[in-house]
Image (cartoon, rainbow, N blue to C red; front, side, top):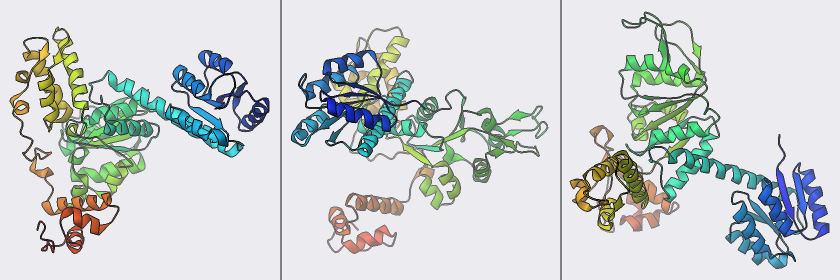
Length: 459
């Protein structure tokens, strides 16, 4: 394994000797310098994994040195070493971007832990940068700077570093397949195929044939043998979209395949091994499906090793405008137009709308607006009627199917559970927030019959 390259800078010869010995014991490739200017020159021409520097140096102020290092190599973690009298300076260094600080006298175990944490941070940061580069040139679905999307990006990078099954959840149009593609591209399987299948698009027999393959003569049209998608995705990723639509009779077969890592083609006698990572996605409330026994619990937990939930567009704030600008530029170029500008009034309409179709709906809206715009500016009149005339006072239901409607009692129970989570289990506080008495909260949380509220709150 390659050694971590560490640059240590301190104008104290004794401290340099001590750190040289300590870093050698930790198995690091250490470069030691007593000059801040020399350290900056080395940073500009060489690659280091971590920089460790003393804050109290005669040649250059420690804070200024940190700023210079972060400016030259923003992706290289900086650990500052400080004595008791310069603790405030160490805190200032953290504020300008230093990763961590150590206090004198330094301890070998603490230094080792700090370097390990810095390396992990650097690796994750690089994965997130790679992820953003991957999705930037794609359909634009994951463009965004909102906190929910930053969390999603970090989780994708972490999931990609493993081979665990991933379940991507989110409303229709939020970009679940794009997330699956990003996981594949960032993973060690990126050299293999990315194979996608919509589980809602085929009948059970055709779905089984697509997934597991079939032998020659297995059914009327099976004139030749065919490998299933599990085998076709060998060394890569198999993406099962709309997994919540998987027929109940297919679920035990899929579960067995995931457990045994083998499939039996339709009409065949022998098992075939496969090596594919499984990523699934759904817009359905699978917990409700479990309760109604329309989705197997054991299959759910087999698929849901790592869960990534995509936020709906209405919860992403200013990302709406970032995405809109991306789509305006995309379709303006496609239609041979020059750059398009969004008017303030039209932007306000876009932000106010609740986007039940999420990013997919926004892209369609942007394409329409570019096509209909009379000049270089998108005006309110270029937007669809449902966006121009949107009334936020109306209740929005995130589904187009009665099959996705959750019973009101179950919805209430989950809402109460979430309020209790926010109050850290304080039932009296939860009751005050909801306008119920404590016993009513407990009874409704348990799914019992609703009783009258002592405080005269909602029944």
